[in-house]
Image (tube, rainbow over all chains, first blue to last red; front, side, top):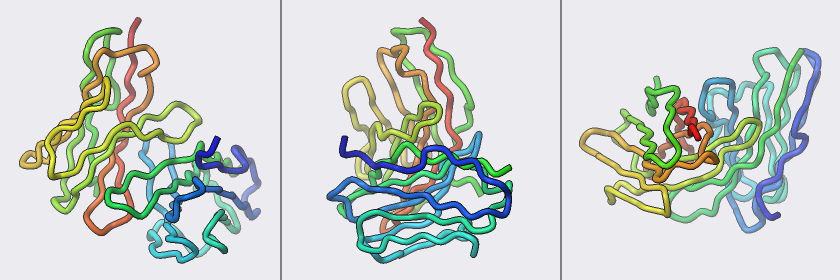
Length: 114
Length: 112
């Protein structure tokens, strides 16, 4: 399967701990996105990369959040000093930089902060 | 500020009939619209899209209609099948912008 892959699929952590999620995009896709989804809401944009450059960050992405895409391939999203409000599904998506913004999502990483 | 609105949280439709899901938007800069389908504990799956230069796009059982003057789009599924039971999200993007803005979703249940 050559879809977007995310790891881990589920993470339970104690408040105050750091967590890191990894995303492997579709191999030929140069754009990579992180979204967050909470219950009853649609996905909310966090940030996106074109190759290794992080080109946009949402104001939802507080200082405790950092995303990287070191070689323009996989990406990591780290949340430091987790809070209960960080509990959500973190979705990674990728696309090709052609006209039309069809992005393809991975299966998501569920975070529960207890 | 909900720029993309799906006002029906849920919809139930008999198997074989037509399902119509609606979406309204407020941002006149949006020029590309998409529908995604989501099963529980999975990521959204792309279904169909439409550019603002069109008013209809069809792919198999799925058709999306866009009414720019009303800032409204709809997704028609015909005939509806049990596997169509899922949450459907409408999304939009503006020219030159990379992010998608999503609605809150409509849970579609197909009744056998």
